[in-house]
Length: 74
Image 1 (cartoon, rainbow, N blue to C red):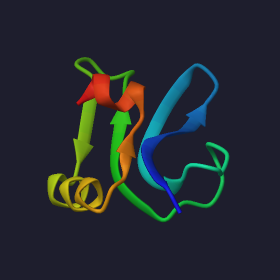
Image 2 (image 1 turned 90 degrees about the horizontal axis):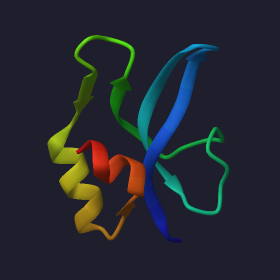
Image 3 (image 1 turned 180 degrees about the vertical axis):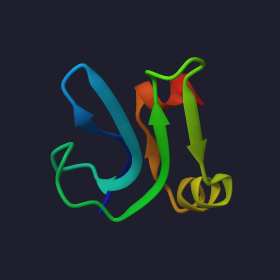
């Protein structure tokens, strides 16, 4: 099973918020995920990005790949 770390959109229309999740790469963006490791709110000024660095390092050590959009944020 290959695993990705990517953004999952939540929130209302015109008010996006995102969870940073660990998910099987074959699943859709908003389906059941393995673990939530952070949160991103682009609508605040400045944008709020919080994530657990230890969990991120743990999952990347296990072989999880970050999505391109998340890599740009971090």
